[in-house]
Image 1 (cartoon, helix red, strand yellow):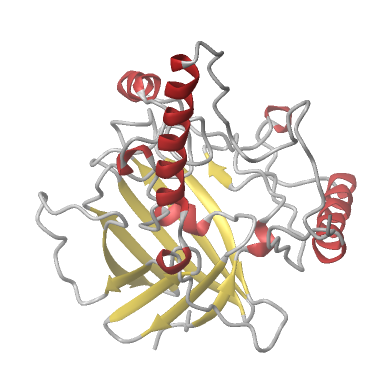
Image 2 (cartoon, rainbow, N blue to C red):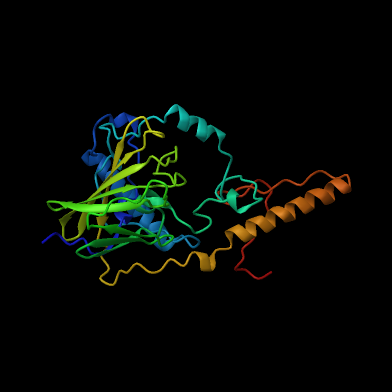
Length: 314
């Protein structure tokens, strides 16, 4: 007696849409025809490069172009609210963390939850990324499960009118309780750890409450809206809109993302840091200049770097 949300979905079609609306748009939430055509050309160009030129990263592009000006739709200007004073102080005090930063790796706490294959949180999983944007929904009378491809988190949404967990029980993805309002599944989540952000620069707190709306708008699309209310982090609530769409391939399937099994990030980074410390000690003992510590591996090589073709025998 309710709509079916079940199936294998993707947010690949949301790539190319900015999370936060450019200020020049004001309250305009859709593109002009010219802007739409420019986005279409950019997305097609990205897809062509991914198929014909790129070799290192799997880079997935969608097949539909949406004319949304931003993923944030409320407030009307499509921009996230200001951080609270407490959140700004917390952000300023944070030290670099994770393999995409210049962090110094001494313990596992110097790595992100993403590095450690633990979670990306709800919005790390829902907002479009370079790859791994699959979502699998399985629906029953009393439960709906939502599995996200990257890191392979699964949320189980209870529909049986149970109360939320006690306040001292915290979970990375929160405690989800759902109900139907007409043709829309409404999910309210509480009991967050405060360790996972919501897609913005300020992280989140344990006071976070997320209200999601899932509405099947046609056979190939679910409109997803999520309102974030975290009074300790943001000065006002705000809302994302994301479209879950059916990929064109009939055999599309969300496979298991075996992150832990192939993850060498933590061990390699810790051992690399110890190797660097050894190099520093040896240089100082010999009265030589301290060697430069390697930085982020992503981006163009530094001036003077040795470059060679690994596919060419020497």
